[in-house]
Length: 307
DNA sequence: CTCCAGGGATGAT
DNA sequence: ATCATCCATGGA
Image (tube, rainbow, N blue to C red; front, top):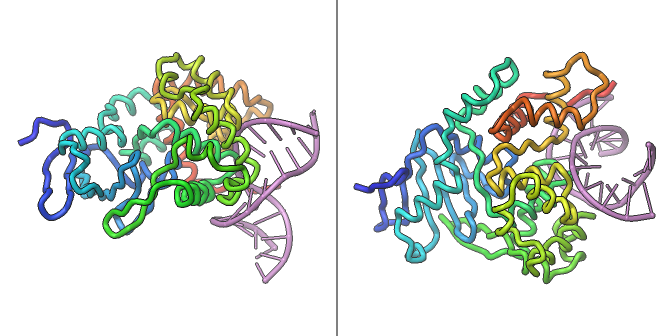
């Protein structure tokens, strides 16, 4: 018997298998909601990396079954590994309380219902920052391709359950490439920004870890000084990389939802006042509200028709 | 202020 | 099959 919040069972004999308790969690919604881009779906399972670790994960009811690539689990105890996995998937977020704290209105109610079990995961900071620099002016399908190309070219190959996965290249690895090499990954003009930011991170001119201690406003200021990072990307990195659950990134989908559902009659409304409304209205867990509205709109919504 | 810079997926015709 | 649209940062 394990005294552990998630870990249910370990079977290290036949394969490296962990079984975690994951109540109120929906793996597919979580990995398919546009917050992370590298997980590959194989039937019901997902293949990917958590940091340097290759992971094969499958949800069966309220359990998560995990295969881990390392033969000896890098000396980690199964309970430590379970903690690591649970931390990544944010299984410790009090989702009931978070959902209850979101505003009650017809729009939010539908999104909250639709996104039951969707959690905001905790991504490695550099990986998150770099990926969202690549995301600007791209759609989800395209970001996935860029992420894959960069991992295949510059990351480390791992094998898990007879599938290849690649870790995300560290900043100094990308800093040692060239704009030309990065462009081969489909980055276009973002290559220059990513390279410049990678260099600043590699040289510790931008110390991503130490920024964890900063309050929201100052963290956002620091992020926005990096090449390729504007308000939207900064908010994504805060939300997905720095656990700033209040951060509310506004992209075209969210802006459309806010305008059409919350202000259908106000034709003249600046983006700035929309952002201010969102920050005030959705409260301390605004990031969850944003993610739920975003995912629901993308899954059910149609693009705006012209005319 | 406006215009533009990759480019593959997606949808309309 | 071809054509237009989607995307959000930064520089001219």
